[in-house]
Length: 251
Image 1 (tube, rainbow, N blue to C red):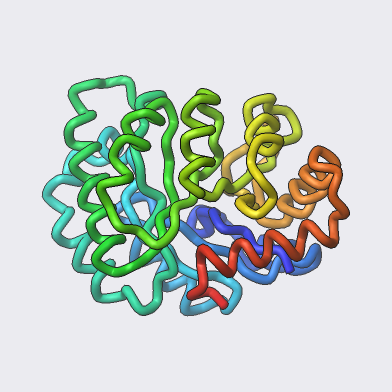
Image 2 (image 1 turned 90 degrees about the vertical axis):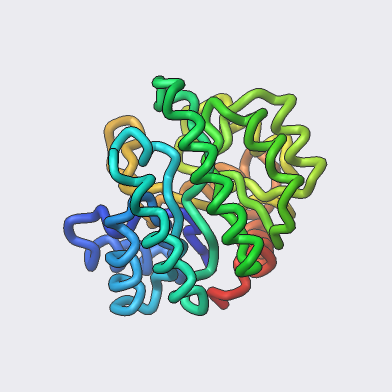
């Protein structure tokens, strides 16, 4: 069984085709992660409609530059998450971003939102799906203050010193189709034990101009198999077990 643990399914124009394509290559579960205030209800609707999709709700760190009202909407966000905590399998996509968000005046608000999301994860005893781009040190410095059941680092491509710190702490790492061309993603795969690897599409993000889809995680698995010199069927079973450990509510 293949599981895409990080996808923005609400952003596809024809979701039925995306799901059909995914099922054809053996993808049986897709975690749909939230990004914005407006996306949360839509993700819940989609998860109610499609058995293959499981919701994870949170506020993406880029929302501070995309939505000038996000600070005033946080109580509503928390309300949506708390009301639906039995349905959701994780808090995400959350974190910090100092790469795509250039305006440093937005960093305090970004951090405040991240802290609120971490506190929610702790309160609801849910794992987190994290974005750390350009802010790896700050994120990893913050995490030990919270008692969170499990932590996944989405699409890690940062400095090796922070990668090693996260490995030592037992964090998980979800690998995207960027493995086909990104030296940083390949380094992550080579350094992380197979017991802590997961698969994700991050669709519909584009890879070399091609829209990412959950079906692509089959190729990601095969590439990891070659890099780690592990039989693909054995690797698939191991990653399925990893996913059961970190996201038990989808099983």
